[in-house]
Length: 451
Image 1 (cartoon, rainbow, N blue to C red):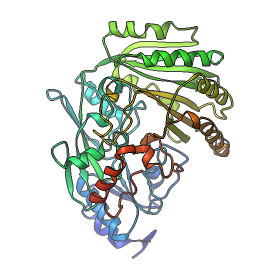
Image 2: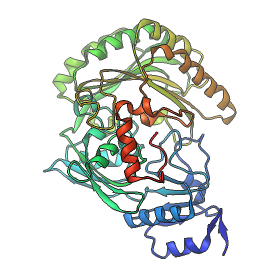
Image 3: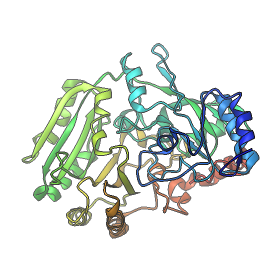
Image 4: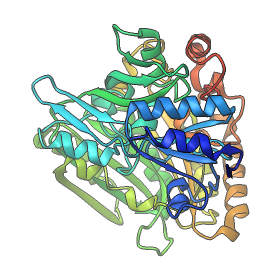
């Protein structure tokens, strides 16, 4: 029989006969579209893409890959900046067809297939006046974001996405379908809440959801000439913000394509309109902003505000670290470095951890990041492939210049392919327990390293 990059076609045909989804191989009309991920810098070619329509499909794809000794990757929403969800020459398990969402408004829970995006989950829960923490880009998949921890607008009030996970259906390396929760496979459940996707293939997630229908959201942008003063103000405002306020602040370029640099603060207040008006008044009254947008909106809408800044297919290279301090010297440094950013799509932002996310013990989930403070996220984005070297070089130089301000803690979902040997920074005191759980559920490393 003919070969597909080392796979005996006969084995694929045998699998196809009992497969609910779709098997895609090089040469198929949809191959290039299916293998593509959000980051256009990633260009990998799987030997076979298993677009799974059921848990049985996932088990069969795992078994085939193990039988042939091929690498396995798992794709949910395909937003992984590092592109780990797609393999070169192996079997990519694509969960994009698993789109079922069920909401139980009485129990305040929502169960969603691993191919669901946050836009889809938000729309389903919003129909019942409910929501849970889930990212800031609506096209992101729920799977990867949750397994890595899951930052979002609501984390000050309700914690991370992983903190709201109450159950998961998991296919482990042995092909067994397991229910992971606080009472069933509790160690596996602990690892799934922030330990990444190296413990099995999660096909469904069950979340705790909260009464959030509308929020007060928007953006305040100040001229770059006032950037240092604006960041100093935001630092003080953020450290005194109530739980209801989610905040991201930093340096961006104007969204109109002009490339004009700005100091911007994105906010989301999930309290009452009256509380939001009082809490946001200092932020909205500060200085002489170039742009102000603040309005009452459905929660799903606030989750789309940054979508346009991260278009599918654009080239991305990110760096991130938690900060030891956010002092005046650092602020002056980021303003100086940002003025030479080679791309008008690049941003340099700080995410503020406070409230509910900091009231969880560092060992309660696999997420160790439970101290109040700031996380740097340097998102270099460009569209011209010939500018790749310049953008990567600028990002690395800027990140290196900030090293003295970092603590040795990194957020799993922002790690890139050249961030190696960082398990301790990602998991800290939880690293040893994760390694033991990894040995128990995936002793042969079918799903790769934990970080």
